[in-house]
Length: 338
Image (cartoon, rainbow, N blue to C red):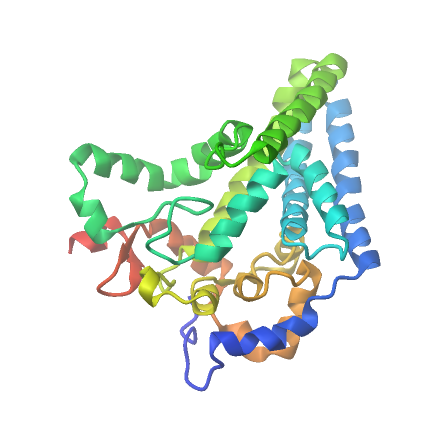
């Protein structure tokens, strides 16, 4: 993490709100263009991989992995739809999000609600468990039984967090409206409707391309996008100097700015991730379309440096496991023992 994460003479988090409000207006043509340059290549590469599978499963697998980058971008656009920032028309945004959710294996209305909870309580130690990465304090971890500590260590292991975990999340957990099962039929309709559409597409893939098309083309695309997506979500909030406080000391805008990183990615990766790395700005004002987040940084240099993290620096985040309330930072299991 850049050493200039917190410096003097910086704006208070709430002072940024009226500044950022100037960037909230989406452009329908630009949004349509961004949607097109994501969905059209995705469909083209998907069709190409299905055709190549007739001759070489390995080559088809390679194309499928490349296509995972476009699926990741589609999820990021779905993310903007969920915030109502992609189109002025909320109904249009929601239906674009629902259609994209079929391809990202994500029931849109369920995800939108849990993600809203994440935005409303990110960094609040008294409101954890929905739409976030499970994070224990050092005290909570030490109070667990040996089996409880082992389970948490397994959950936080990189192979589980970024390998098995994303597969479970998108393939299994998303099939039910977990966390919202008693909150009305809307979320059941979202989950079951998405499942039905996925089943239909899966049937057509197998019918025309065989099981090989599902195994060597569709699943690699989805699982790669899922793993990278979880990594992005992780580093956006799980960095050493992040922000956690109890409810009585927690403040929404402060948590948004101090508890979200600016993941400064190379240009190509920034494009495929739809600027989601400019996450501190997004959390401060989630109604800004992703393609205007770069305008915010261009016009407000202070925000370029707030919470800045490079690609190389981000890999150190994988070793952080517990929130140390005494030091106000995330620490590793090893550091927590010292």
